Image (cartoon, rainbow, N blue to C red; front, side, top):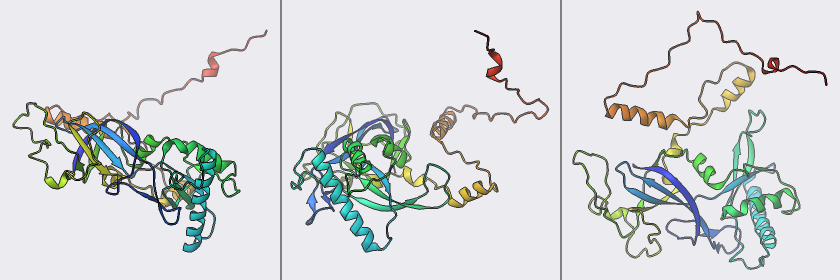
Length: 322
């Protein structure tokens, strides 16, 4: 496993590469090559302090619409194909692009049938949705507007999670936090490999990436001319979204727990906003390295003390006659 501490990130639109990206749209026959696809760039540092620019491929912005049609496989495929072509056509007209120019009007790389429990309101049963992916985060607002106005397929669609920006959506989906570690199972280094002069303490056991320590199988071959350096970072790396291990640590909240909560037979004691967990783990490791006493636990409440009294704010104001 390889670790990189996240410092900042952005995204760029690039021509797709068959070795790392989705290259063709499924909503044209024969399939048409996509013109541009998004790539997220994460600027990070290794535990040993080496700066890295990490290119993350196959992460597309998306949102959902409800699906109430037949679950027959062929019926689902027909509806998805018709929906994708209709969105491409409507979006091309909206952007004043010739819809017959199929090379430049493939905006939808994929649409998937998924199921989930609706977030708004109280629901304990699954519902079906279509997950619509886009090739460009900048098009999402326009596509949502076309769907909500009934321009696509002559029907108004309710969209879900269309308000979430692309980069926060990526962070949420992959269980990533600012200044936390990005854990990766596989990667490829871009050439040329830089060697920054620095002093490495001989007792430091942290992995230090150099031309001598990086296996040849983890470096793009010289023939891969499309993978050129784009930054001044010491390391420049390509990974796929599926290589991110942080996502595997997400535990789905069981549906039965929602039913029990609704019936009043169970209390929810799970921390649903674990954004400080990694900071506390780092602090524990720091104290262990420096032989500092562990973080003391807060004392339990004293049952002999009276409950704190809360004074109403309204009691501090009086209404006078005017």
